[in-house]
Image (cartoon, rainbow, N blue to C red; front, side, top):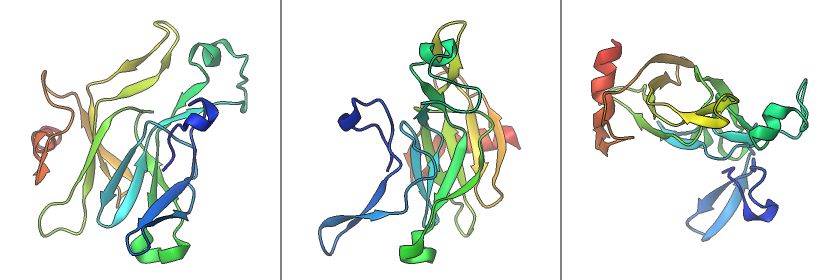
Amino acid sequence: SGGFPHLNDFAKPLDSVEQYEIGSDSWEPVDALNEERGDKQLINLNGKIYAIGGEGKVDSGPGITVDDPLVVLAGGSIVLDTVEVLDIAADGDTAEWVTKGDMPASLFRFGASGWVEEGSDDGVIFVFGGQVGFEAECECFRTTEKVMVFNPSQSKVLGQSAPSTGMANSVVVGHVVAAAAIVMMLA
C-alpha cells in the first residue's frame, strides 16, 4: 500500500492498495488510502489493517506553496499524524479506509507492532522512535526516542514515553517484549 514508486522518481507517494489472492496467484486492488503516504507502518491487529503516520508530498495547499522556503528546504515533504483502518474481514469487497484518529505527533520511518493480551478482544499498537516533522533550524527531520501506545478501539493515544538508552526499535517474541516494560511505566 502507498509507498514511493520509481515511476515518479520517488517524488510522490501513492494511495493505492492491493491484496494478494492465493487461489488465483494474483494481486487485486482494494480501496485506496485516504491520504497518499510513504514511509508509514502497516499493522494487522484483530483482523484489521492500520496505516499509521508516514510521509506525504506537498504540491500546494491552503497557505502553503511549493515556493514556501520551509517546503523547499524539506523537499516538499510533509509528515503525517493520521491513522487509517481497513476492515476487509467485516466489510468484504466494500471495505473502505476510515480515518481512526491522530497520533500526538507527526511521524515517519518508525517501527510499530500490534499486541493483543491473551483472552482480550482489544489490542494496542506500539509505535517506536522514528522521524518527526521538518525543523528549519537544523534543516533536518530529527529523530525521536519516544514510544507511543495507541488504542484503536478508543481512537486515542494511551500514553507516550522515552525509552531507556539502548532499547531496541521493536522486539517481538510472541508478544511485544520491549513494549511490555513501557506499559508499566505509563500506568
